[in-house]
Length: 68
Image 1 (spheres, one colour):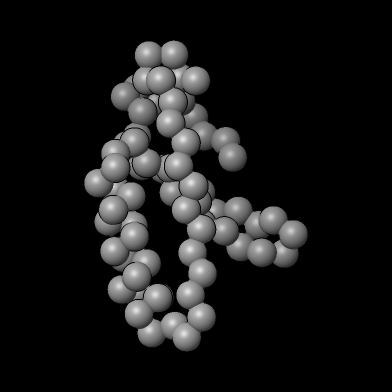
Image 2: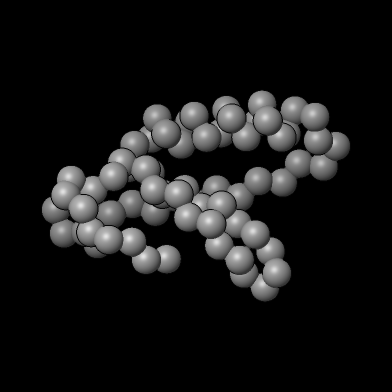
């Protein structure tokens, strides 16, 4: 995943990845409200009608002062 550095950085960045033949859409967000919206959207668009439900969500936090 590569992108050009911007200032100020975007609040949300979307990446499309192919790994071992599987397609992933990865959203990197700076705000918790974006994650809450993502959960609502996925539930509405996919999970409500699905007989088998599987969703991946990973959270990582960084220090905004150091970027680590």
